[in-house]
Amino acid sequence: MITLKFNRLIRDVRDKCIHFVHSIACIRKRRRLTNKTPTIISNNCVGGIIYYDLGLPFNSPTINLYFEHDEFITYVTYLEEYSKTELFEDMDTEENFPIGVLRNEYGEVRLYFMHFSSFEEAKEKWEERTKRIDFTNIFIIMDGGLHYSKEDLEQFDNIKYKNKIILTNGVESSSKSSFPMSFYDETYFSGKLLALKSIISRERYLDEFDYVSFLNASGCNENTIEGEHI
Image (cartoon, rainbow, N blue to C red; front, side, top):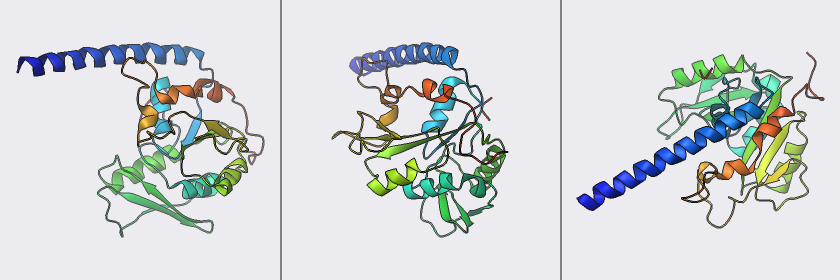
């Protein structure tokens, strides 16, 4: 019993130290950030984590959900069109969380709302945050480099928004949008991107990617059509 209590105390102290160090790192990142209103479109929770780290409002609908990678590429390729498309519930699913469907002439895109308890709640947030998209300040981040084909990377490169990056294992170096990450190795597991590099490290694998510099490359996206945490 004493050993269990001691181990629990050690873990609590370690977790508090990690939280403190991470908080200091976030403060430094916020001081470096000049672009305070980016719209980060991501295929999973990485966008929400970046918003949270930087203390920014969620100016993006892609929060607390994930896409299949091919459908995400379709979504961002026709972002303006899908932003005007009504979201319906996918009733034919065995998942224990709601799934939404965007359906238009460009195809079906499914949204996996794994952090929502109901479709009604998910749809409300999706529509609310979709209205906040700034099409002149778009930043696209795609994570999941073990699953991309050469065709996927080529399609991603051809997306009209200039501020885009795809986190990969570095194998397809020909992709101009590719950013190699060390966490895609033989010990890869889901969620590793947000894990600490070691028990004594203050850095997550995500921190290999300088997302502050990425977001500071702001300004109008050259190829677009003219025109608080909640």
